[in-house]
Amino acid sequence: MPKKKDKSKIILQTPKGMHDILPEDFVFYKTIYDKAEEISNYYGFMPIKTPHLERLELFNAGLGDTSDIIEKQMYTLKTQGGDKLALRPEGTAPIMRSYIEHGMQTWPQPVMFQYQGSFFRHEKPQKGRLRELQQFGLEIIGEEKPVAEAMTIRVLTLILEELGLKSIVVHINSLGDKECRNNYRKELLGFYKKRLGQLCRDCKNRYSKNPLRILDCKEEKCIEIKAEAPQMINYLCTPCKQHLKEVLEFLDSNNISYFLDTHLVRGLDYYSRTVFEFFEEKSEEENETPIALGAGGRYDYLAHALSNKNFPAIGGALGIDRIVQTMKDRSIPVRHSKPSKIFFIQLGTAAKYKSLKIIETLRKAHVPVIQSISKDTLKSQLRIASKLNMSYALILGQREALEDSIIIKDMDTSTQETVPIEKIVEFIKKKL
Image (cartoon, rainbow, N blue to C red; front, side):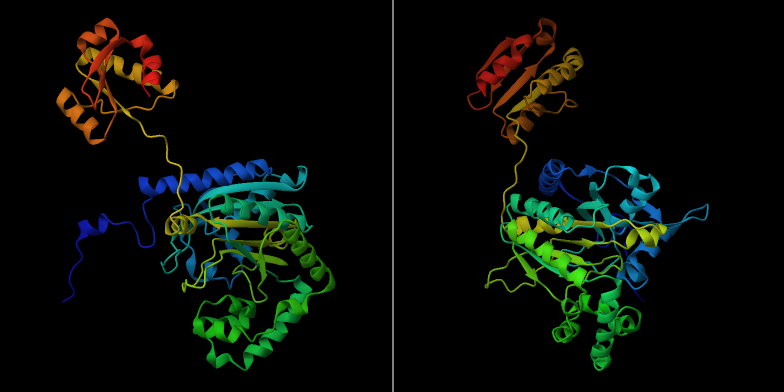
C-alpha cells in the first residue's frame, strides 16, 4: 500500500517550481529592478502594469497554437461567471492589448514601455527555470525602423553590464517576414522530412504544424540535427536583409558584442524579422551550458492577430531570477541598506506612548534605528541589542518620558549620558 503523504508537510511547502524570495535574496532583486528602472527611465520608457490574469483568448490568438506556452505551459481557470482566464505567461501580448484598448495609437509614436513582475509557466523546474518567474521588460510600439531594436538591445545590455556582468554577448538572427519565411519553411520541411525518424516526439508533431519550432528544441539529438539545417539568413528578401544589416550596424557603432546565430528562433509565433538573446560569455574552463539572461524580438504581426490592425513593435525582457543566480555565482556584490547601529529601548506606559513619535523624528532625519517596542523589560531589550551588535542604545524610561529626555548608552563601553529629546538627532549624528 502506498504511503500517505503528511498533509501538514504539504501545506508548509511552496508549490513545485515556485519559491519564496527571502530577505538575503530580496536585496539582489531590488538592486536589479532599481538599476533597470533607472536606466529605462532615462531612455524614456514609461512604466506600465497589466493584470496577472488576462482572458485566455488573448494568448491563444497572440502566441500561436504550436507554441509550448499554449500547448502545455499555461495556468488557466474558469470563473464562476464562465470567463476563461489565464495567469499571464509573458508580458508582450497584455501590453499590446492595453495599447489597443486604450487608444494609445493616437499618442505621439512610438510609445515606449517598461514593466516588471511575476509571470507563470507550467514547465519542468530546473536551474534558471521556475514556474513563477520574475521579469523586467521593454516594449516599443509604433516604430518599424531598426533603431527600435538598437534602443531595446542597448538598454537591456546596459542594465546587465552595470549590474556587474561585463561579458555580455547578444545572439541575434532574423526570421524574415511572412513572404520570405514561407520559402524558408518549405526548405525546412524538405530537410527534416529525411530525418523525421531521428527527431524527438514533440518535434515530430511540430514538423507538420510549425517546422521553425524544431530549431528551438533543447533535446540533444534535435540540436545535433539542427547544425546541418538550412539557415534563414540565406532566404531573406531584400528588405529583410537590409533591416538586419542596419540593426547590426547599430550594434557595431555602439560596441555591443554580438554573434549572428543563424538558427536562432523564438518560441512564439508573433515574432518577425529580428530576434535576439543575451548570454554571459563563458570562459573555456566552464563546461556548463549557458542559459539566456534575457531575450526578445520584433513582433510586427501581433497587433493584427489581436485586432486586425497593424502596429510595428519590438520588445525584450530580462529573466531576473537567472540574473540573481548569476550574480551570486560570480560573487558580484550588491548594495545593502545602511545598517543601523542604534537600538531604541522603551520602559513603561508613558515611554511607549512617546516612542513612535521619537522613532518618526529619527526616520525623518535619516537616522536608522531598530526597536522591539512590544518588549517591556530593559534586560530583554538590551539582550536583543547585544545580539545585533548595536553600537548605541537609546533608553526612554518613565522618568525620561516625563522630563523629555533620553539616555544614550554606549554598548561597547557601557557608559551613558542623558540628553534632551529635542537634541537627540544632533547628538546621534555627532556620535556616528
